[in-house]
Length: 139
Image 1: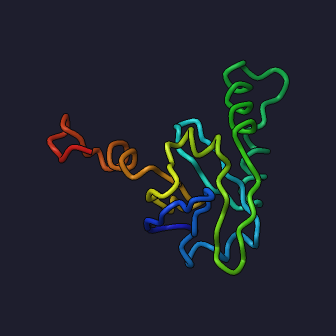
Image 2: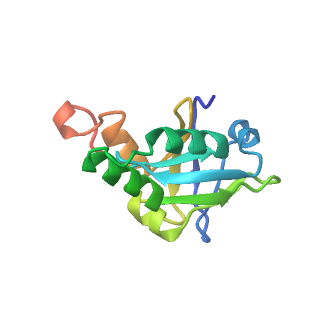
């Protein structure tokens, strides 16, 4: 179970240190997924395989289900979770899609079954709903 949040900078090589409380669940391996709601998710191997198997459409499924499954599987990447420092290397394409920039902070948020990796401004705007239209501060 992943709950809570923290912020760490993405290093010059595109690596991110995971919070210590999240590391043990990965046993050295995880899956990064650019999700259908445009956020980067980190899943344990077991949860990734379970979720993908449940989402895999059969041959008679509507095209929308096939399209979603293709997107999830195409924009997924197996990653090593370094046992000593708990770092993961985020592939360039996934960093670009999620608006993550080297040398800048990444919002790491537990969402019970997986972890989400956010550009902090996107997190404020989409999760905390902080922008001019809601009367909050400008993100």
